[in-house]
Image (cartoon, rainbow, N blue to C red; front, side, top):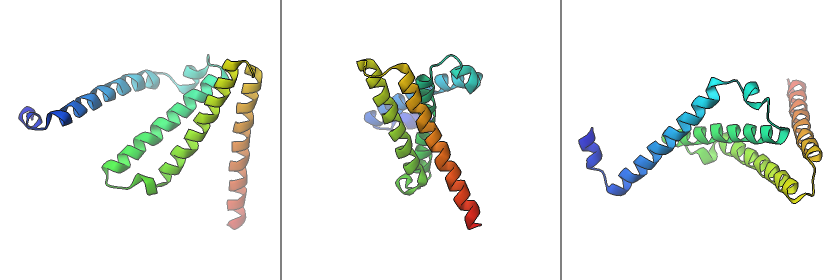
Length: 138
């Protein structure tokens, strides 16, 4: 197998090595995350930090699935995962905006938490309305 790798172009070997190093870092991070439950990890975090963590997890999972689809020869840009990634990116942007407002002193921690709570309540409400519509169709 080593001979097979040696026959590859140097640039490709460098890319494979970088990918391997990044994957190793991901595995170490995931190992830390998987040894504790999510409530244990988030219990000491502020609501904004919890939101950042949740969005990071959502983005990571969807990105990995996006890459998996690519490896299977499926165009992920035509798959619903693309829409989900866009939705998560939107929330990441909202969290970033709230963080920047906090740093600039224009917003207090309380109002940031309220904004996140309103977003989460709005999502739950939208989800409940979708479920009601489905029930009516059936």
